[in-house]
Image (tube, one colour):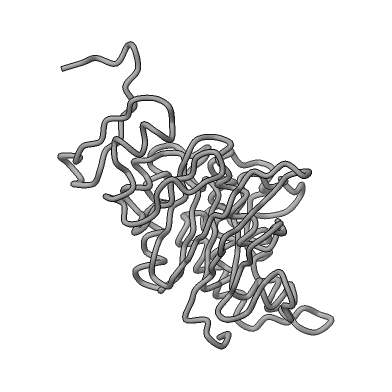
Length: 272
């Protein structure tokens, strides 16, 4: 454990740019153990850029990221391998390796723990097996990943992140390319990681109902600014969402789940 890590991965007043064009303006995010924080908002609002900065992949123009009490970008003594023992990121786009088995790809997540010239990792086999079981890919362990569907491959990469056994998990659109069953299963795994294992989760989601189901806190981004931040019910309001998305959004309690249901109202949306 890092000193002061009871944490928290936190981005404070982040200003982020792409090729000198600022896309995020002073956004703050704090991820705490056992809590799922969802970043939502329109395309181009800066959600994925914020997540990449938290993962030490996008250097802030201003502001700072802290892991525990240690600054990540300025004056940090953290090596890449040490950082990877605490934080992992599942991105939207990952290459599909050719001629590599599912089990081997899941094993990639163990890279921060391998030591010596032979890459010794005593706990690796058990961690990989557990990660594959949690994501439902055990039966395809020997298959080549280049034979898999997009949804199957997404679950394999998620298993690789879980095998890394970090205290912070960052997910960028983890339900992309998944059918309904596996969307639900991935969301359940995310919630289990927070509730049962104390993992701090930061997740970018386009589906507002998914955010309402699994998140403890939500940050609503629009044009690179945090329009609202806080508990789900305080952020996912008709007023906030209509302002952020530029279309009327109706918000009501779902009669089945009891969580919020967010529905955009278009010209052809049936009215009761």
